[in-house]
Amino acid sequence: MSGWRVGHPSPDALGSRHRALRLARRFRRALHALPPLPPSPNAPEPAPAASPPGLTLGEVLDLHGTASLGSLVLFWSMFGQLPVGGVGNVAGVALWWLAWDWWRDRVALRSSSVMRLRLSLRWSHRLLKLLAQCYRQAGLWLRPRWPHWQAPWTRGWWAAWVALQALVIFLPVPMGNLLPGLSLSALGLGRLVQDGTLYLASLLLGLAGLVYMAWLGDITWRLTLEGWHLLHSLVTPVLQAWGF
Image (cartoon, rainbow, N blue to C red):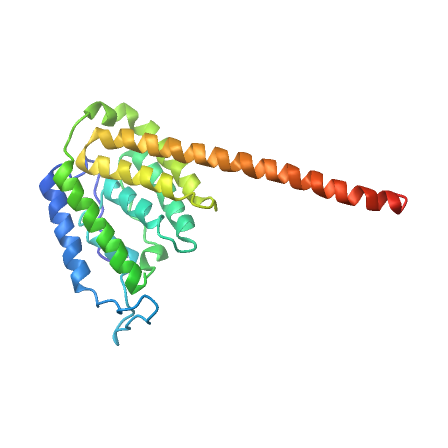
């Protein structure tokens, strides 16, 4: 995992709008540096002769410069929302590790084959565009406020919150990645710009995701019971006819 610089225990570096806007410009430049997409979504992607198309996850993280908890939580939560099979499992495990780092208030360097995972050219374009827009809006509209949401004594509670949302992202639930992914995106961005309103938004989005999970679980349980009763009503007459 080359070039992934990791910060030490300290407040996240993105405490100003100017830094967010600089990151937005950096991601836009990286986006323009990629090979152009084919004109049709169904057309094959161009493959450069020297290397595979698209960026690796490590290269996307390198664009952040010095890695911080906020940037990593934001990146992995956005990555987990991509509609590609298996990304929820990868993002869920990564966010579980970041929950531990959040509790310790530091980022540990981990060399992993996950960082060498290469995105397709189309998904590289989409992810860079999404991150560039996110940082641009953060620089334009967000600011440091509501510091009591970010007090040191809340660190353990937010670490548990990240772990809980990571578990939901990891589970193979239809549309289950969306709300917890948005929740952790808000939390990571809130830490980056030190904006407590995004901490509150993270709670609201995450609670909505848990309500959705409970509702879906209730429906699944009811359907399971109805299916069992239906199967029992069909099988019982047959068994009785056979003398069982």
